[in-house]
Amino acid sequence: MNRRAVFIDRDGTLSEEVGYINHPSRFRLFPYAAAAIKHLNENGWLAIVTTNQAGVARGYFSEEMIANVHQGMTKDLESAGARLDAIYYCAHHPSVGEPPYRFDCDCRKPKPGLISRAARDFELDLSESWMVGDRYSDVELARNAGVKSAFVLSGYGRGEWEHQRGTWIHQPDLVAENLLSAVEVIVKRGAEINADRCPRPPGAAT
Image (cartoon, rainbow, N blue to C red; front, side):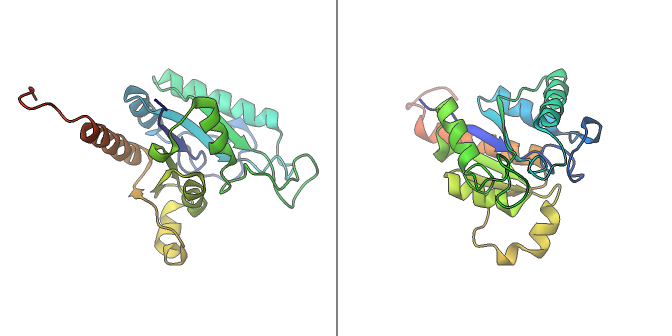
């Protein structure tokens, strides 16, 4: 049986939105981030980060710096009892920088390449998986990849929701205050789907 995953945008969803993170000291997880990831861990969902990091293509920082940020992020989450199953990022930009980073790739969100790669690596059931993010591009990514979308009001989310959603072609499947709120609803809905598929036999104890 294929597994389910929650794909999580990084900046503005898992961590504070402060612009390009060009040094590990600028990276700050939201206070509820570990609780959200831990809730997924405890309920059998994979927690996978998917993030655009075009600052590499723009020359703002290197991939080594991204690795350092993600190492610190992973360590901070693990110290709180939470585990990420994978991190996928796109360092490309279609029109800025120099090759190999100036490249019209299939992994820059909202294109589905990062999620497609994760689906192959982990044998995921994308029809039951989710993407959580604070930008409309995350909603587009979800639709392009065949997963459900949860839009959060942290980061850029509240501004986009209040001022731009009238222009959106697609609407999210879920709107939540933040990552933890979104994860709680996703896990609950997943449990309800499983219950419907495996009804208790007549007379079974509840």
